[in-house]
Amino acid sequence: MKKILILLFTFWVTTLTFTQTKEHLSFKGVPIDGTLNEYVTIMRENNFTLIEMNDGLALLEGDFAAYKDCIIAVATLDQMDLVSKITVIFPKSRKWSSLSSNYYNLKELLIEKYGEPSEIVEKFDTHSEPKDDNSKMHEVGMDRCKYYTCFELENGTIQLSIENDGFLSSFVMLSYFDKINSDVIRQEAIDDL
Image (cartoon, rainbow, N blue to C red; front, side, top):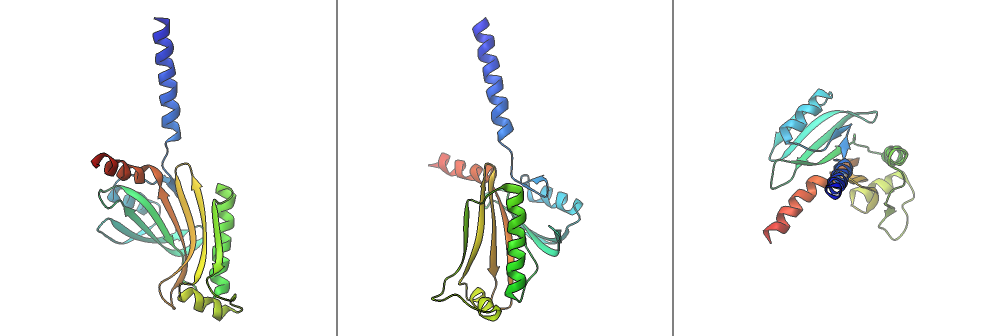
């Protein structure tokens, strides 16, 4: 009887410990989990305005990390209505000085919150380093600017990057990838094999 009680207690402690470490990655303090409608409802309660929602993607607008008028993209997994990724697109910049300033400011804040990044790449894929603001922005528009910082966390990945959508649209992007919900689809695929 004593052995059974010890086994039950050990099982209970192990289960409790396991469930405590299995938390979803959070965005604005909200776990990245649930259906798209549920998550959008919570974001609207957090003062974000819904712009559009269809095909597993919702676009919202609002202030984030002291930046005005950010676009927030909430994405579900392709195979099911389960939120797994949040992306913030910060306001567009037309000058390298403001674009890089936004990137480095956010990087510093992320390091303060999450610790040292797991990967940092900050370079231009050119023969020589661009010298001035216009040259750097040209390389951004040509997709030859490789600036990103990744944080591998127990419950997911956070990636900060400089991105573009052509020569006139360059911005900083911050993406949150929830590990638990991404693993759900992975496990279903493995089960199918």
